[in-house]
Image (cartoon, rainbow, N blue to C red; front, side, top):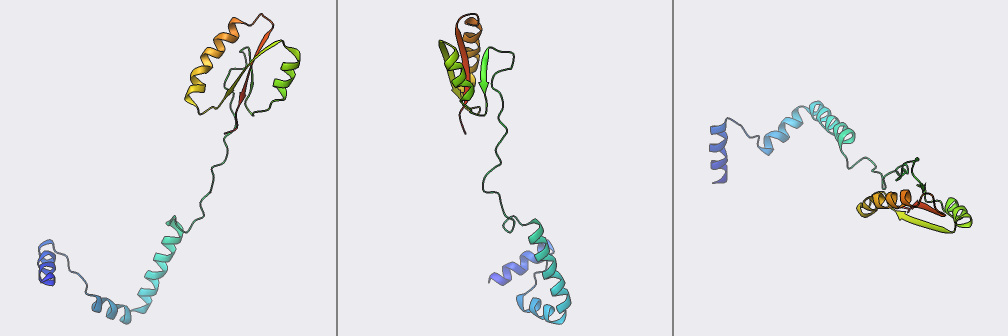
Length: 135
């Protein structure tokens, strides 16, 4: 019954299905074509198949970027180094420190307020510092 339905559909759309026995006989009659086809398919899979290529386990790290412009009154440490902060702590009486992550929305939102505060207190004995946290 299924063969009758398949044959009727094949006639209507103009497609002839190859039976498995015919395919095997054709492969036996022309082994060189079979070898060429298999070689082509293996080459195609190796070249364009993603499962055979090694995939990177992790993404390469991005270069750290400054969150505050160099002309601002905020000492920015984008690599997370605390040495500039320690030097400022020894020299200044009041130090305001902002730890941030460049991908964090809340850190980006707090940036403008931190800049406003740094500009307001720029002439007084205080220092504003920012340190990027490791991602």
